[in-house]
Length: 382
Ligand SMILES: NC(=O)c1ccc[n+]([C@@H]2O[C@H](COP(=O)([O-])OP(=O)(O)OC[C@H]3O[C@@H](n4cnc5c(N)ncnc54)[C@H](OP(=O)(O)O)[C@@H]3O)[C@@H](O)[C@H]2O)c1
Image 1: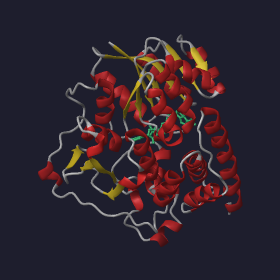
Image 2: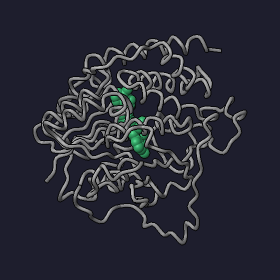
Image 3: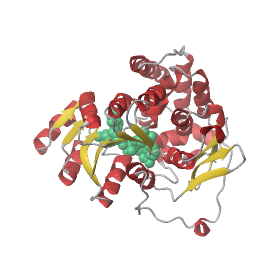
Image 4: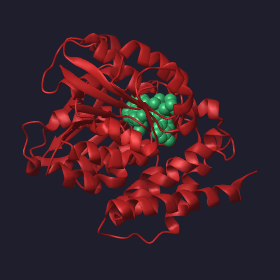
């Protein structure tokens, strides 16, 4: 039996992870559950999954949960770290939509766990620390569907044979809309993703295409391929999850219906391939697969992410933290859609990147960027 801790169990990835565990009760069992503040959903999950340990980020949520359950409920960052390092967990699913889970991810690797990583923000902000830790202990399998695809395409290949990585993007709800329409895009419109049902942060990132910018940085960190050899193609059907082009001109891709339970199961059961919960892909039903270049004027987020990759050091941390703030501001109705990326750019413009990254330095600039991005957002309140 493999023990699994889930950081972000009440969310989209967390819920789908529990579905996969439910399919394989003879192989996988829940050890720890961690979330932010949704104590009533957590209470129901505790009753169903009987974890050994529970963690809530928010103190008031932990306090309201405690009288409802018998499992120990820890709180704050310490609680998340306890869930990430629990002795009976072999796998830690990291699925909280914030770079603030970087430290817990590093702790899990230090404790020798397999990290099944959905949180791209972790690799964007602290990719070099994660890679460094992986040379000493622990292992990592990506859950992000594009990176799971790249991981699978790269298995058995020499890295010097790789020409470039090609990340596919659904394009979100706006890729074919004129720029003018984006100016007054509402939260509801931006949350209406055409192919994936995901949490609000990543859905807005998909609409601005910052999601793909973050994924360029994530892929660079995971696979050691520089950002200028990582391309992006809009692929509205979300069937081809990403591709690797080799030096001899051969191209490998991984395909399936869009369903996150597949990359989640892959990360949990790797290297075994067993029947999954997903519908089979029928290409004759799909008919055609189409691909388009993204429009750089409509989606400046991609160029910003490439710029952050070129500058390196603390700049990706600043890009990511500013984006987290700007997305939250948009979701709460305080800024307009196109201002999200403008706030990220304005925050980056106020930063001189520093090299020689440490966790302390990353945390310092993460906090700094959140403060500056909030300041930049405040200037734009209507
Ligand atoms: N959903 C997808 O299909 C998908 C695909 C690829 C990658 N990802 C990545 O996976 C991560 C999770 O995405 P999701 O769609 O599952 O998100 P989600 O549905 O919004 O769920 C987020 C989970 O994290 C917790 N959480 C929210 N804000 C937090 C914070 N500030 N600090 C700590 N915990 C927090 C939530 O707890 P409460 O419920 O208690 O608030 C919930 O358990 C993201 O990094 C995303 O980019 C998601």
